[in-house]
Length: 165
Image 1 (cartoon, one colour):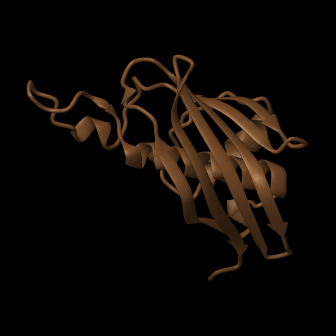
Image 2 (tube, helix red, strand yellow; image 1 turned 180 degrees about the vertical axis):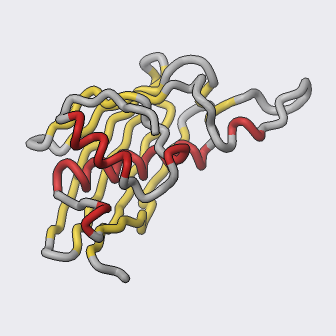
C-alpha cells in the first residue's frame, strides 16, 4: 500500500490505510494537507494523473467526450474524506469493528468537468454530528476545486456503526 502524506502521526495514518474498508485502489486521496479536529475539517488533494478506476475505461477517441474524472470517482472521494473524519475525529477504527456507509446524498452539484491533469483540491467539513457508543452519524459539506474553480459541491450524510457482524 502506498503512503499518503498527512499532518498526523504516520503510524496512525498507516493503520488507517492498512485497515481501510476497501482495497488500496479505492482510496483516491494522494495527500492530506489538514486534519482540523476542532473545526471538523479536512483538506486534501487528489492528483488527476493517477490511475483512476473509471476514467481509464472512458472512450475518448475523436467525437467522444473528453477524458475526465468521472462522477462515481468524485463520489468515492467524498467517501474517502468521510472515512478520514470518522477515523481521526470520532475514533471509528475499522480494525476495532467499525464500518461505514454513505446513507444520503442530500445534494450533489457537478459544476463542471474535472479534467485529467490539474490536481483536485478537496475540502470537507462536518455540518452535523450525532455520536453514540456504537453509532456515529455525520453530515458533511464537500467542496472540490480544480485550478481554483469549484467543480463539485456536495451535502451528504454517512453512518458509522460498530459490531455489525
